[in-house]
Length: 417
Ligand code: NAD
Image (cartoon, rainbow, N blue to C red; front, side, top):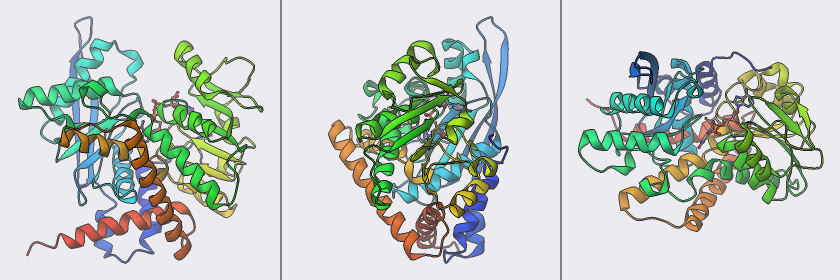
């Protein structure tokens, strides 16, 4: 069963675990456990029937020591101030772990977008972009898609910003459609880094990915692409799920056909010749690799005791609570942490921004090659850090890398007399 753990408290614990190894002033560590600023705002927009509605929205700018704040915008009823603060912190550490020159940010609106028409979502998104305008910019803060947002919302935000600023600034946001300044390979980037991370981890552990069984929780952008690319690498994806439930076929699913079924019916459930299973059953299935790709806190310490997989690769942000991490570490189950495994999204967002600034587009082949280099280099650094420090899991090693790089940038900036 998923836990009610506060993701911001989880982030602070994760930083604390790593701080014991990093040589930094406690005051600097305290700074690295809190956002620099948080916008909390109420957005009023017109419903299709002419009535006005007001909803809560946030943007957290966690840390800008290494570059502009960077992070997605989520539309979900569970969005809270603390969730956005945690997600912005994870972005700061993620960018540092893959050595992308950004800080961390995150935003969200506390709505279920399924309750609104496209016109209502456009008015609401433009209202949010108007509130964000003084904070964002190509060199200041660069939003991107997250849960329940995609190219459509990014294009609206870009257009609102450019219109209000009377300029063209495609690099103000990433995850745009190709004709609006998007990058080849961006849609697949998060799932691609998950698959690459799994490949590197199997290799490090001397296990064979070909023929290994995989279960994927959450079948949206991150989960469905990861499943398809793991299948391409020879793994057998035997179970997947979404918010309506899961499906299981011990002989292996065709991830692309399951995706087509979800596009047609709205869910993976009901896919032909599969057994139904609950999300908790999927998370504790006897598989070689588990990929949580839905939301935070999918696995708490109680459920972790029943997780059978010997490797967990986190596609979602914060899918394991700190208690779950401890249980898995005790059982020698390795977890490739979110701040590396799903960093493909922000890495190709960075490539998109570079292309926007250069007004020059890369081929998909170049994007994928550069992404593979970034993820494999980051994985090597992670393993070196894990093996050469007294840390109890890969996550703490990743924080040691990330905190170290942010602290270096902070120190090098010097102090104001
Ligand atoms: P998405 O909206 O495309 O997909 C989310 C999926 O999770 C959907 O299939 C939904 O049905 C499912 N889901 C929701 N609640 C669930 C539950 N309780 N049990 C099972 N499934 C559930 O979102 P996404 O972009 O794929 O993001 C998924 C995760 O990956 C999030 O944690 C997000 O922050 C993270 N992430 C996404 C990107 C990206 O580029 N899209 C980048 C980095 C991290």
